[in-house]
Image 1 (cartoon, rainbow, N blue to C red):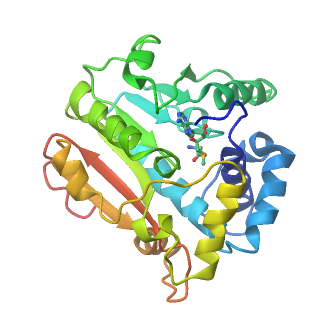
Image 2 (image 1 turned 135 degrees about the vertical axis):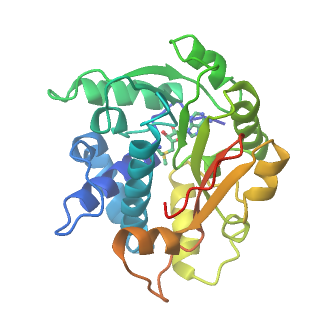
Length: 280
Ligand SMILES: C[S@@+](CC[C@H](N)C(=O)[O-])C[C@H]1O[C@@H](n2cnc3c(N)ncnc32)[C@H](O)[C@@H]1O
């Protein structure tokens, strides 16, 4: 059941994104994250630090991965939809002529997002925003009401959201993208594994991370080990999945055998079969 309060995990992610952006050798760059996270976001991050020493790295790598993908795909896909936008600032940071950004979030989170953005003097207005509860409402209809064109290809970014939703809501979201949107539409999202959701993990840190987020009122309830069978069933025919290790290797040039947070994955999928892209 969706809370009447703005998402605390969204503030947490913004705080980690800010810290990662301000690191000596930053992997990602989000100059708005610090103001958007607020004191509450940084306080929550300090609480989570002890149990999740790699959370900041994961958020940095995830941000860099998705920023690179938005930059590449928005050369051809002229609509970018951020589902569960939280305190994301891509519409401002990755704006380009001719590309329209849309942002969707739960009512309380969206209202707080808009309140915080309005306090940033240099931010401006870069996206059409609409509220939606993914458990009960149809985001496609909501988006169409603010000018989104379902018959034109789009990039759908669904970052840090899938694991907070019920399985029917996850399936409904993926099915709506596959069935109601243009077949060249690309969706990118992250997900966690089933064992992590079940609390069965070889890492005490990983189990503590899950209980910390649950205690904040946003329990993680959905996971899947390999998204491809589900995506195939729902109509997708071009699917690529990256592990946390693969994303780290790409954006940090490192692999660490002892690294925690292996329960995370990133997936990019579309309905239409793609021409193989070599070397990308
Ligand atoms: C961890 S935050 C991620 C925010 C942002 N995507 C990011 O990565 O910075 C999760 C987001 O999902 C949204 N969310 C969770 N459940 C939702 C639901 N049932 N309907 C709409 N949004 C939801 C929350 O409001 C929050 O903004």
